[in-house]
Length: 522
Ligand code: XMP
Image (cartoon, rainbow, N blue to C red):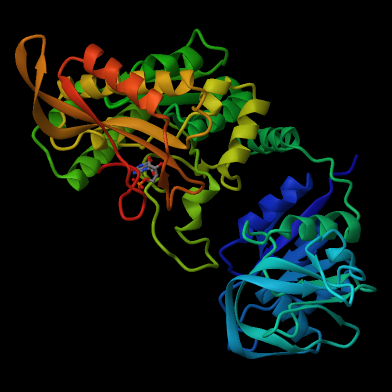
């Protein structure tokens, strides 16, 4: 059966991949391409529909991104969002101007739900005229002041006369708002109506199809070449490694650097899955570099210096291993979409460089970097991981930072402190799981404060460390709130830690949200 595809044409907005992800949620395959994609290439992909994204420009500005006008003659349905909506108006003969009042944030939009197929499933408050009022996310300073010939207005707000317009005959639709963001309460219904009712997609695509397609693509690209993968045991690099292993088998070598700053038993767990006794037929190299990292970190207290030392040493170890393996053609990275979103996508503005991107050496001798998960969001990566048969305990792991326990031990790192925090963290994780909360809390861990305090054990005075427990609820890790853990859980964990972990006499819980704190302590 022919694969249905929707193409998102990227005009430089921040939500481009989010649109693609929402379309995939409707079980329709979706790819993002720059708006400059040649017409022939676009036609060859045979899309069932095209979505124009938002973007930071004004359509009437000099050098503003415009789409090839031939696209409007292909007979393919088009949905323009925000800048994309204004572009439809501009290129098809309507008018776009600076709005007298800009609109940002959640906004009530009145929609012609009775007549427009795009809004037929919206079920907000009914108005006397048969329209529906629903909350959508707005972010614009320009607006469509005149619709092109053949279009009708299908949505408006008190300050935006054309919040939506359409030419149903030609299947051209436009929304000034962003249906793709979560704040748009019925946004997914709008996108689903476009994809299914306007474009006529069946919606039978699933993650297994993504996995199959990627495997084929990788095989073709790699040929008989050799592939190297830096495996951390985290979800992303594990899924990337298994995908590559299915595609190219023994041509893949995974290098796992144990820097001595992993969680308790983590190195062995990773080896059990990816090593020679695990289910995958790949070359696995575990480098036990613990002492090397401890030596470099000795006496270093400054968090940024610790991060730099750990990052640099990781690269050195990895390079040494890569050299031993010899001529490697491809490097695999488990980069996922949130890692790249803020590093700039070529068309959009750079907000900040993310610490996961570009963390590996670029002077190891390889032809190309393979990033099979670059398009996906975390939960999609997890779905792909399950499709690939990776054990659930690996697939649903919480995030763990590259510098590991090095940034969860405040102040200087020593092997003794690593042991303390590993033991405390293992108890905490075990009890969170026992209380059935391990999938509910997005990240939780124990850290070792640099504070020692007086206590009493038996009849003796003690002067030991305080462990700090952290648990946060967050969807994107940019902001987070402290989880309200049950007192019984905190009590149990506290009792176990002070009883079982030598060197700890106090347990504290971190109630701070992010901002002003961060998730990690350093
Ligand atoms: P913060 O502490 O910045 O953490 O609020 C947000 C998320 O990012 C993770 N994190 C890191 N991940 N290398 C990583 O790979 C790092 O240096 C790093 N610092 C923080 C953190 O665990 C949380 O999930």
